[in-house]
Image 1 (cartoon, each protein chain N blue to C red):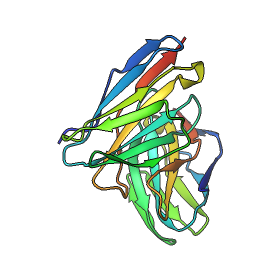
Image 2 (tube, chains in turn yellow, orange):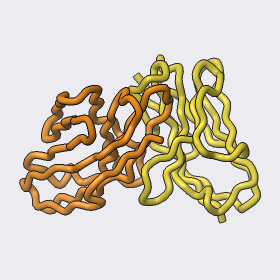
Image 3 (cartoon, chains in turn cyan, orange):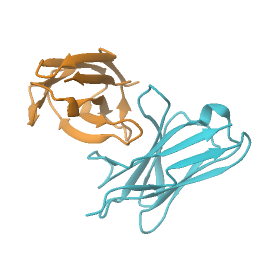
Image 4 (tube, rainbow over the protein chains, first blue to last red):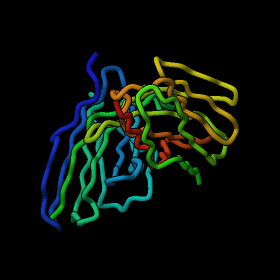
Length: 112
Length: 110
C-alpha cells in the first residue's frame, strides 16, 4: 500500500508567478484535502475534493484553486504568488470525507 | 468557528521523565479529535483519533485521553526519538476540515 506522495519537494518562485503542486493519493482513497502550514504554525485548511468535486473551502482567496482527477490524484494551483504564500503545502487523502487523513511529506514553496 | 489551543508551546524533558501535553478545543458537535506527530520538514504522521469523552487510546509510550473540553497526550518514559512537534486537530459537525492547534514542540534530552 503506497502512501501519499507530493511533488516537487521544494520550489522557489518569484512574486507574481504561478505554481502547480501535485499529489498522488493513498491507494483506495477518494478524498483529498490541501493545507498550508506557515513556519511555527499548525496547518490551515485550503480546500477539499471528493470524487472530483470541490466540497469545502477554507479562508483562502480564489487565486488558490485545485483539481482532482479520475484516479484521485490532485493539483493545487496558486496564481499571482505573494511573499506570504511561502509555506509548506500539505496534501492529505482519506476514504470518504470523515477523517482518517493520511498526509504527504509536503512541498516547501518559497516566494522571493 | 472551531478553535484548538495547545499548551505548552515547547517542552523539554530528560529521557525517562514522563509528562503530558494539553489540547483545549471549542467545537460545535465534535466528530473527532486527532493527534499527529510532525518531524521537521515532514508531513504530520497520524497517531490517534478520539470520538467521545472518556475515550482513551495507547500506542507504545503514548496515551491519549479525551474530555468534553480538552484532550491530553501523556508520554511515559520518553526517549530522544520521541522528539517532534505534536499537533492536535478537531473536526466539528457539518465540517470537512481539520482545525489544527499550533502544536507542542517536544525535545527529549538523553
